[in-house]
Image (cartoon, one colour):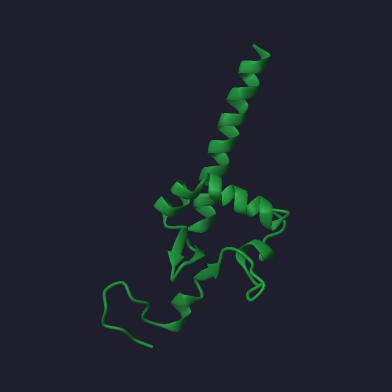
Length: 100
């Protein structure tokens, strides 16, 4: 499938880079359901994306398409790691200030 519009996917393989972020009754296959080793529940993953929504959107890793949230797989690992680092630094600083 080809399109002449700028930014349009030029082949079907590009569509494989987008995965539904959240499971729904009509679509149980989602990024969160495939990655239970990172987020043990759908609620945990939803909380993470809510807390980091701005960073994830800015990085291009989380995208809203036709009213549904999608993970853009090529950008997700780096964005996830950046958010995790930010959380770790914040947690460490809080622990150190409590110990002082």
